[in-house]
Length: 303
Image 1: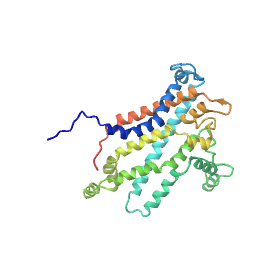
Image 2: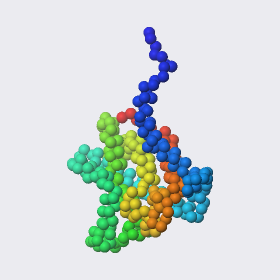
Image 3: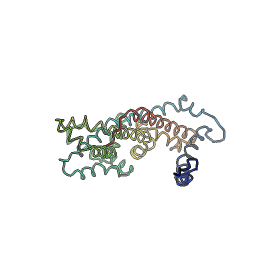
Image 4: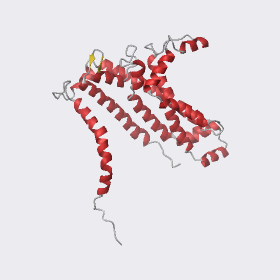
């Protein structure tokens, strides 16, 4: 009997993986390493300054208050998505999973369609809707007997308003994730629970929800990564200055103004890349926390 030669190198694997690895390195690895390099140099890129840029970001009064404000806004932006978008997506998925509901495909399409819209269109349309001058929101508020407030124009309400617009646009994504997971639950398990007298609520909460917990974790980490990279909607709805008075300023818009400059503010490559590296480290820490703290503890069932 011939035995395979285990010491023989498998060059064909390297040959097949090489194009993908090369493309990945050019598009992702090289820009990341170059960003790390730039964050360790002075603003003119001529002298190596080590971690001085990070020290300035976290201790200098010209940088730290603005970074802290953007970080707080980003965390609040993420919390609003976690508290509203994902539970709403799960609720819609549970409703659309009901076989007694007619027109499920139509509802599913309508709920997912805002996700396919451009950020520019969404930001512009919602600016028109909420405009106190020519929008329809003041007329609706008057019809309902509610005092209208320019939610996008007030410091206290602008960030939650932008977050709600984002939730409206992207609630279809967690809905589809949860629907796919719910459809994969075996019918024999559900039938056995029904035979044991489980109600519709018990069927969902005690049978379906534990089985889709891995999907809940995936949706949560995708929400975290997406929100800490958020930029487009704030930029189209409130501009690079993230007004009013920087109340909608996220880490993404703070990085944009710092790196590219805006109006009278000159671009600073070194501090911009420093902010980008800090954002990367926050997302990396959150992802590792999910992989080590959540994914390893959640029991995955073979469905």
